Amino acid sequence: MSTIKAYGAASATAPIVPMSIERRSLTPSDVKVEILFCGICHSDLHYARNEWADVMPTIYPCVPGHEIIGRVVEVGPAVSRFKVGQVVGVGCLVDSDRTCPNCREGLEQYCPNFTLTYGTPDNHGTAPGTFGGYSESIVVDEHFVLRIPANLDLAAAAPLLCAGITTYSPLKHWKAGPNKKVGIVGIGGLGHMGVKFSHALGAHTVVFTASPGKAADAVKLGADEVVVSTAADEMTKHAGSFDFILDCVSARHDINAYIALLKRDGNITMVGAPEKPLPVAVFGLLFGRRSLSGSAIGGIAETQEMLDFCGAHNIVADVEVVGVQQINDAYARMLKSDVKYRFTIDMKTLKG
Ligand SMILES: [Zn+2]
Ligand SMILES: [Zn+2]
View 1: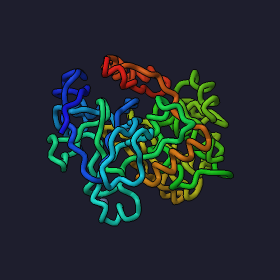
View 2 (view 1 turned 180 degrees about the horizontal axis):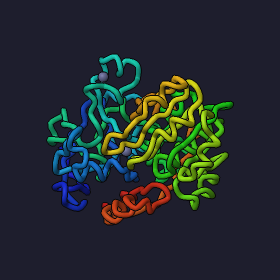
View 3 (view 1 turned 30 degrees about the horizontal axis):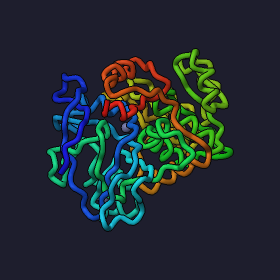
View 4 (view 1 turned 90 degrees about the vertical axis):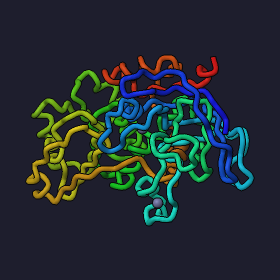
């Protein structure tokens, strides 16, 4: 084992502060990655503050971070896909049982025995829970390590590992593409990636925002149309016209207003996670055989596909780079949506 520097929280009410953690020694199939950049995801804040106690109680001390870009510094003897010096990514998953039906289909994100990058019991016994990317380095089985296309800016590529795959996977699953009308609800960390992907996939992309002031930004991201969701007449104009809507809003909101905009057999997929249940008017689903779904991140193969797609289309997140010392400020600003559109931590500030 090795002791390394990290940033984490000691309790639900504690700020993110410097701490030391252990990383395991390499097994034959492990890759050790020196972390260069780590995106800040809204999940990091929920987890650090134990806000998902009902589904996933936080194991303290906790070190969040699952949008990791780094450089390989050591490989185990059985590692075949990665070399020392290579730039790689690690997302939300670091292990799974690899034998269940989901794993066999490359859908490790739905494995009942997955290991998340932070916050699940550490089956190597190095610590009670896994520690994430707000740290100097991470040791990961090569199956869960991703190649990063050489043309991408590394700080801006970090959020692809969570926000990127979270929006790419449902857009692909529901076949966003040419001759499809796709709606993206909300343009924050998730939504801004959804707009970029939907546009690059060739769909007619409509952005819904509650703030008219965000219209110009939405067009810059790739929107063909912008609808102000609080203007009832603007919403009505689009009734029954969407093939697919990706709902990226985590706050309480009226999803029935969006269900009404779907065509027959249209689907709305939620990727934001509102804390409280949302009321659904079932009649909206019955008329038109419409469906309401959820989606969580993506499997390893699809995450690689998404990264390669980003390389081919020059897609990265819009980021504001911060130092590790600013994580608590970044959390406060994230809660006010005061960032365009994602924070990324420059991890060399951890050495400082
Ligand atoms: Zn995330
Ligand atoms: Zn599995």
